[in-house]
Amino acid sequence: MSAATASKAAPAAASVAASAAPRVLYRGPPGMKRALYYFIGTVFTGAGCYQGFLLTQHLSWPIFTRDPEKTKLAPPMLRYAAGTAVAVTGGGLGLFFFWTPSRLATRVTLYPALSQIGIRTAARPFRAFLPPSMRSKRSAPLNDQDLCERFHPLDALYRRDRTSAVEIEQFAQGRGRRVASAKSGTRQKVPSSILLGEDVTFGYQLEAAPTPLFETKAKNLYTQYWSRFKLSLRGETDWSPVAGGHALTQTETSAKAQLDPKDPWFMDRSNFDRLFPVRDFGTNK
Image (tube, rainbow, N blue to C red; front, side, top):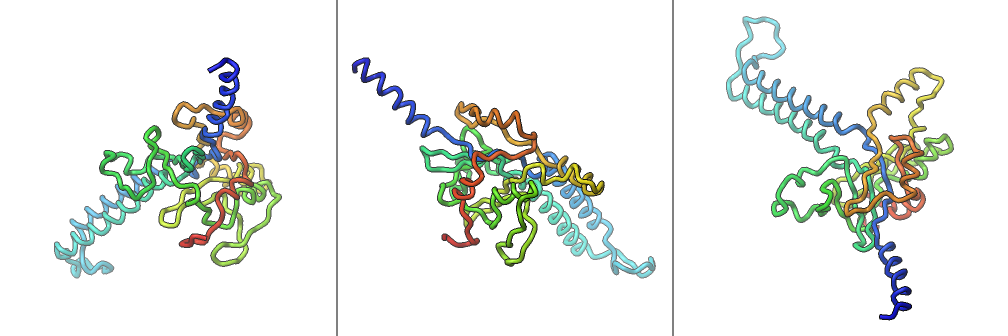
């Protein structure tokens, strides 16, 4: 190959590589700090198990009488059944809080070479702790280089609410309006998050509202301090690099320096809404 041909091929190859490189569409914080979810989950699990144990030892019948002479210890089968039910309920609620961070999206990445969307969450899904051979094949595949990220076909994801990234930003900045609910059709306050998902899976929650939604400078002191409290619960935006040695782009680096640590970042809110259209649950339209 001549030097002239090689010099022409090099820019073309670089252009192809650039077009196939992953593109981050969204970076954001979890709605609540991951440690808080784990703390609440631990409280529910511990309380449920402890109360369940107490019921197995001390459940009396009848329950609402105050006369000790009329009260007697419940049969063992009833005591253990009631204690088990309470323990399982508490454990189930605790498990829900342990599971929730794995559905809080902190980064959405487009992989043009794969025609896939990678969604990184605040925590790994439970199956990420299993050996690869034991993981469900029906679930979204995990990124082997980052087990917090799952892959979905680009055309399979949609927004499960009529609110959009643009409307949420406008409402947060005082320029928006209340929108119609997807279910009831009545007008309601714009939420701070977007639900993104497939027909047969649980959705991912994306925090889309910038910090102006939290009225930390409101004249009403109650509103001001309540907003500050809610903002303190919010996690920080995920600025981690895409797995595979892809560093932050210049645009991302600039945004990280300018935005509040808890502000979400979109490459383009309007295009984000167009890329993930609104669909009614259970349809393929």
